[in-house]
Amino acid sequence: MIPFKLSDELLEQIEQLIEERNNSALLQILNELHYADIAEIINELNLEEATYLIKLLDSEKTSDTLTELDDDVRERILKNLSAQEIADELLELDTDDAADIIAELSEERKKEVISHIEDKEHAKDIVELLRYDENSAGGLMAKELVKVNENWNVLTCVKEMRLQAEHVTRVHSIYVVDDDEKLKGRLSLKDLLTTSTKTHIRDVYIPKVDYVTVNDKAEDVARVMSKYDLEAIPVIDESGRLVGRITIDDIVDVIREEAEKDYQLAAGITQDVEADDSVWKLTRARLPWLLIGTFGGLGAASIIGGFQEALERFPTILMFIPLIQATAGNVGVQSSAIIVQGLANNTIKGEIFSRLIKECLLGLINGLAIAIVVLLISHFAFGTEYEISATIGIGLITVIVNAALIGTFIPIFLEKRGIDPAVATGPFITTSNDVLGILIYFLIAKFILGF
Image 1 (cartoon, rainbow, N blue to C red):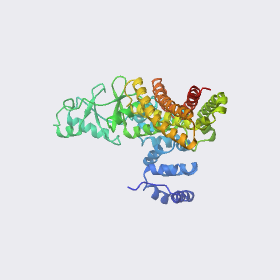
Image 2 (image 1 turned 45 degrees about the vertical axis):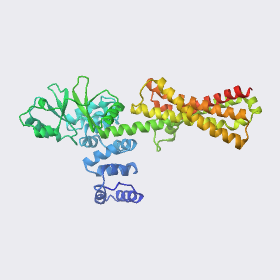
Image 3 (image 1 turned 180 degrees about the horizontal axis):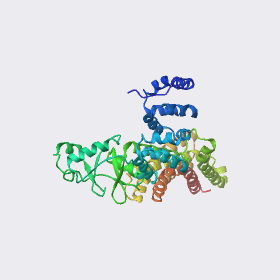
Image 4 (image 1 turned 90 degrees about the horizontal axis):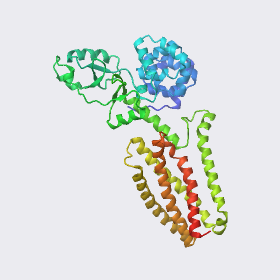
């Protein structure tokens, strides 16, 4: 299958067909496309065109397309649809996707839409899912699954599975419960097919099954499913009752959103924003860290100003200030990025002290290598005196070790305090290392050069 790529020509053609209200030609194009590709097209249309296209599609394709739209586009389209139209689309969706869409509506609109859902059991399941935090296992799970009772025999089990499978888009696993709906294990399809029809399920099911609870964090669910290569995982409540399942497509979304969030935090953006957001929203997201960086720069400037007399006597050391700042910032970001990645993947083991010792040794080796290169260049290219070259070399080594320690310690410290360690990378580390790097550099210069 060739990946879909939206061209300007296709977009112009669709816009022209919408203007002409040529429904047959539009449907001929859209029926050949995946709903995710249709969503990509709708994201590029204006509100009137997007709403027209959504209403033109059949109900099943419309519902799937809605789940793939950009959040702001979907929000605007939903405002243009009646409560009955939204309710009709939700009937075609699994409960988790339906709950995600309803959650974007106002409280009054939610009640109106839910009251129009004809399948009351479907509506009840959606309402139940809305009780959970969106970043929890309960907020991610769908109610659709296939479960069998441990007291059934194989023949009864097969009959019940056929009825349940009609409401499940894809059967990943067969879960086994007791009379109280408590999760007992899972059932192998192979065992089901090769066992006598009179055999009871309790005699053939597999008691070992991975699961999560409704209040587990989405990130923890993603970690479990990634570690054990699971396509789906059952969700139980506080009493151990089976209440839903989470599938891999939902976890991919969690991983992507978490990666985008961490990337923005690392870049010094404090809110979840996109390029098409308003100037005011983008400013609020970017300005805080820019101000912190500004104050950090002012702090570095004041440190340099405090050694003005020394700079007049030894102007050469001024030339290497950008090198000290850049090196300190780069080393800090490298160290923090590795630690943040390790924390996210749960691969950081052992005590903080041993981790700091390791980073100290690594910083020392890197510092020595860089210092030797800089010493050779500064002495032969710039003709610097031995005392000044020694100041630069020792300053670099010390600053690099310090930056490596800060870049390692800060993310671990933040993570233990319940703060996203991704905030430690980027501007935070760069700014702190700039200021400390300049201070260390001048203190070493003062000690060696005696000013």
